Figure 1: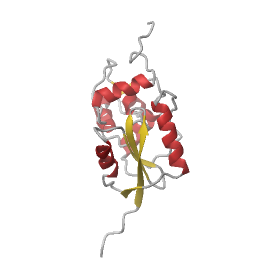
Figure 2: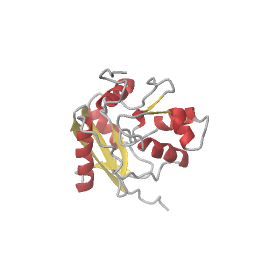
Figure 3: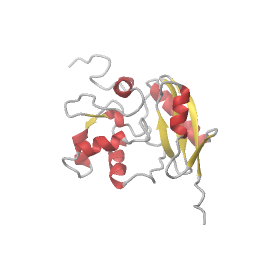
Figure 4: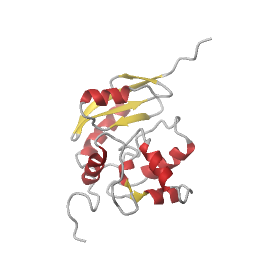
Length: 186
């Protein structure tokens, strides 16, 4: 008896103000998002990597994903959107990650939380390190804005997306987060 066929998921690459990004989706919502890598081929390789629940192939986005792509593009030029309306496929996430991502997704552009605050909000006081590990596994950066979670001292520590801390800082600058980019009065 052979294993059941895996459902298909779709993916598309698209240009943005910061480089070529990619998005993968199922019938339920976004499975994976990729910020620009060293070149478009690396971004393509990342987004087409086999998913636990579905085989991913390139396709033209339908109306919903095209709208999501347009708003991601606008967001990355500074026309900020919280991107919370974009549906996600979280079926492969464990309960802890799902809770961390829900709190993280509620952080508005231009604002931040620290790892400990996220841990407290999900009922896991003392779980800052586990929150950091969860965010390091985040397959949907930007849409689940893990770049908005900082160390307790407001410092940048770790970012698993291509470009690392430089990318994290750039995203915070685009979102006009106080303390990143333009100097503030106070």
